[in-house]
Image (cartoon, rainbow, N blue to C red; front, side, top):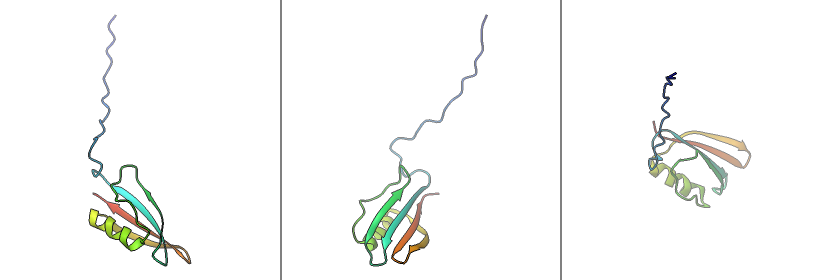
Length: 86
């Protein structure tokens, strides 16, 4: 007896092309221009963050990220929402 099985193809990962698609970064800073933390999608291209938040933003903008939103988290805590891609 012969069994016919349909072969399902899974999409192959695109190794070496981390900038393909959309990437998200959440950058947290103080009101005094001090870097707090950076959260990113897994393959988002970044430069190492600096202690100076303006410098970190400058690096991200030069890579091609766009600022989508700026949100005050507390009286001394700001979140920048940046997107790169599509």
